[in-house]
Length: 466
Ligand SMILES: CC(=O)N[C@H]1[C@@H](OP(=O)(O)O)O[C@H](CO)[C@@H](O)[C@@H]1O
Image 1 (cartoon, rainbow, N blue to C red):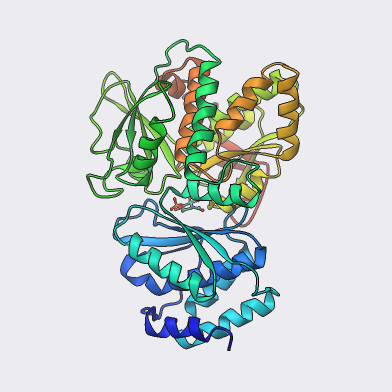
Image 2 (tube, protein in one colour):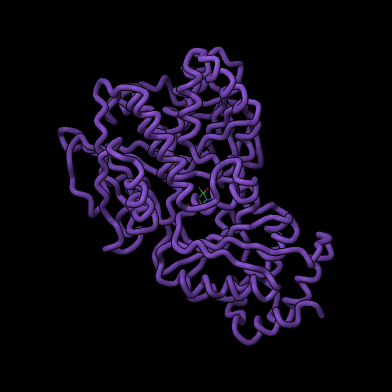
């Protein structure tokens, strides 16, 4: 049998400790960290096969994101930074649920079904978050990849969006950017500094930020970013890792509890940016002069971004179709505002970045955000080329639009790149964060019209939200 050695390791070292059926979901596999070793090993095997199948590097991210520190999880990243293809999610589920002595059989079945040339190189990029268990689980992934003869490039502790970024860059021949962690920081930060220096600050905008790093990898990423951002922003980082990951802080805590994060000094009229444990969600909050708490979540970020981009597109004379993708959990008021006030079409997707991303690809410029702060903007090739040509011809605000595009990490929702995008827009608008909040408090009504339909989450027509 071709995979005897891989199966032996599954029996001897990474034996299955759980008999429950588990499924590869939108967040991959997640569980208590001490139950994950065999899953990590098997996902290492699968990532190797997927790399052979696609003739490309595949990403593996070890994280349980916003979940408690004692949990962990694993997500696979496909060649262009997308989430794992559905057929391979099914393979992942089958492989993880097989008995230890059935591992070789499942691998052979996948190889034969997908017609994989097993002589091909299998390169897997591995990243992990700051959880204490992530180190050990990384070793299990590496054992899996090497058991099928694959090769690992270990990126150590990095955020989920940085892993997506390096996978994409490597596989597209470094068209999108240099396939290194440093390349990521340089590309995004330089774009932001350039954008900032090309326009003067006005109005109520103040470049001061309190940054809640959730005691996770995002705090490390922000620390590194500051080395590249020069003096364009004045960021003070809190929750850098001295406390427990995601505990009473971070994007999920602020969004769900609607509370100011612990560990960040309560400061009136200064915005706080909270991210989650692997750096792919962002939530803004602020305490006003009376100490009242205001939150600016993914819905408000989406509205801000879509509104601004549409203005730039129109003023550049570009005929590009811009749309917003939300989920059924979006606040209907934001959807009503964006469809009725701004005339921007809104699509409704099922929860999970892969669903939103896919739907956003139907637009020339697709803005997608979940209410929990997970999102980004993606540009079609046509849009990218049109913007660049218009920027060269100095039409309207095309140059600005092209600079804004460079700040965005399109490969997946990225808390820090999203934050820089929001900061660019607030700066351009001359808004304080409370001005931003004000701008959307007068939503016309709470009715939404779903223009795009998918899956089972929405039906066409009007919906009322309370
Ligand atoms: C990559 C992905 O699909 N992430 C999912 C997942 O978020 P994480 O931040 O990865 O835990 O679960 C969320 C629902 O709890 C969903 O909103 C989000 O889209």
